[in-house]
Length: 406
Image (cartoon, rainbow, N blue to C red; front, side, top):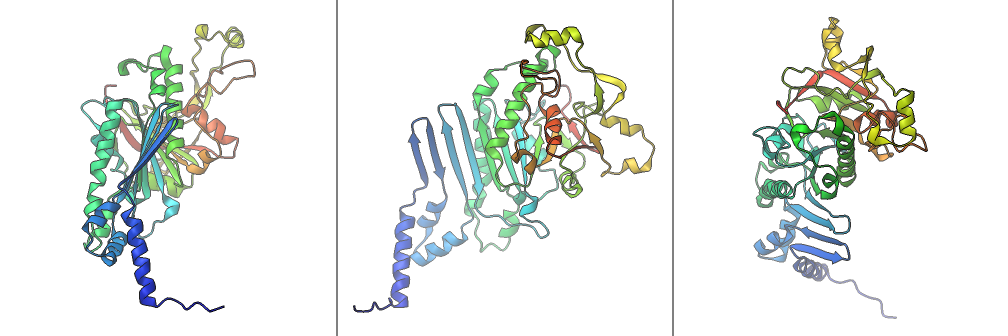
């Protein structure tokens, strides 16, 4: 057998470059497929580099340095939902931070009215990033109800990421520029969720619609969470009608506390504690007659609503009357039995183990009853988390503001 001689280094390098050029020349700007009930497409900026390059060596260098993003569109025709993902291909981690501090910020947006009076998505986006946290460590997820608003949010992020395609590592400020962009954005629309509960925004707090309203909110939270969460260490739900975050280091305080689940206090105009779903203590339970109605699953006639029991209940505003100086610190926290969702922080590991937002009244269920009488949506998440050894906490001195008048 005649031994094979190794290729000369120059020839081997040339072949490698030729192979590289052949591969990259066959990478289209958009990759797509459609199969039965699903379709998928991915847009990349690799072609931009290819058209600018004058040689294989230059192309290789440009692709190595190219600062870009990808846009992936997934459509499920069977279940009727669409997901668009924007992924920043290059990020720069600020000194002192690492992958262990990544955060996923999530929000559900019904339509263009969801941000509060005279506000739009860009206003909400600016509120989100009034938070003092490295953007490269942040991913975003939005469930958008109306198709029109879904398209607006998609267009917003197309424009948002465009500057990355023109940025070169030869720019001495390129790292600082990269740090201004988030890591990943997921935009989802699932019309079938909103179709089951459609109500005018002004009437959404009426007593007779609360069960169905909160069931829909729970479904929305679960859906955007399951479609967005990857390897982020922490998750922050933020309602789209939050207009101001008074304490910009809120995420840092939550992260450094080591708490499993935490909420701040929410103000709205004159109300110092708007989100009363954050509480600890004792609430009313159904009487014998109401329990009988539950056992018959006669929910049309079940009108029970859990209410606070006098001094046996605690809400975050109760701390404001405390004169003890130790209770005035921003880091001061109290244990809670239930949390609200206007701003809700959690270790992502809690969700990864199956804790979700109950879509039904969790407390008081039996095998025969379809529903219980308390603990739906965010108010049930602490109950579930507690069984896994996790706990919920409130920070009465960390404050955010809800939009007025709605």
